[in-house]
Length: 321
Length: 34
Image (cartoon, rainbow over all chains, first blue to last red; front, side, top):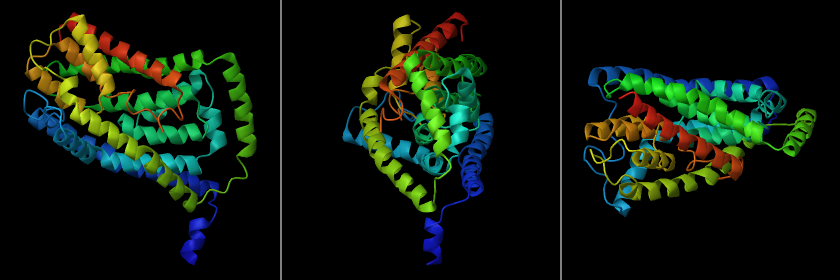
């Protein structure tokens, strides 16, 4: 009975914020910061952080088949499941426990200030798009603006790729510089662009919504039961969708990456094609590093490789929340 | 849940900007002879 009472008991605001902070800090430490720290030593010693998830050690991705789909989904699932669980826990906790008035005030406006806060909050996250998506859903439902949520979403993937160790890759340092130089305007520029594209009517409606949210935020009674319900809804809403997408992309990766050799040169056409393919495909955190490393070793031009390095982490089309 | 919390217009804008950034990255890599 005591457990049931705790389960349904409305939580104090301080307890709610503490739950969010503990999940965020302890989860990120275990799932992201510590493995990244260890991975840096691995990369330094071996000049590699593993095999390409796309094609392993072979020169070509496997032909489209159920086996190719299943193998890719399994490799992808093994790589991301911990971060995905963290994303789902954090996203559902934000929906249930987040101080909505604070989020609406700091992240709820369609202006540069909200975009900046969204982008800066993402820096410690270093999540791939699929794992950041539940958190973006949580933020949006806690009344963050589309512009701030976009900055948060892209900021995660850019900080993830900015933190990737490219030691051992041809022009690794230059690639890091390029990703940071383009990643910062990508995060803040896209968020700002979205805020500018909001119609005047949208902004007026947002302001009204913001005042209502602040007025209505006091009488909530969030509980552990509510959190678990939201967690279950996120799992049911997101996981089957992810599974289908990963299976399809895993099966068809040989069509998306038909060649990997000197024929994939520095022409504008190849660069644009690899940019588009990178946007469509899904990879785990830092998965683009061994993919590009393998492609460069097979003689692919630096132009298409850099395009892939830039567009694979945000893969915005596929894992849209 | 696709499109439920970010509109299609926003998702299209993000995709376009990322795509263009990829092309810029590729061209810069060629220009600076990576």
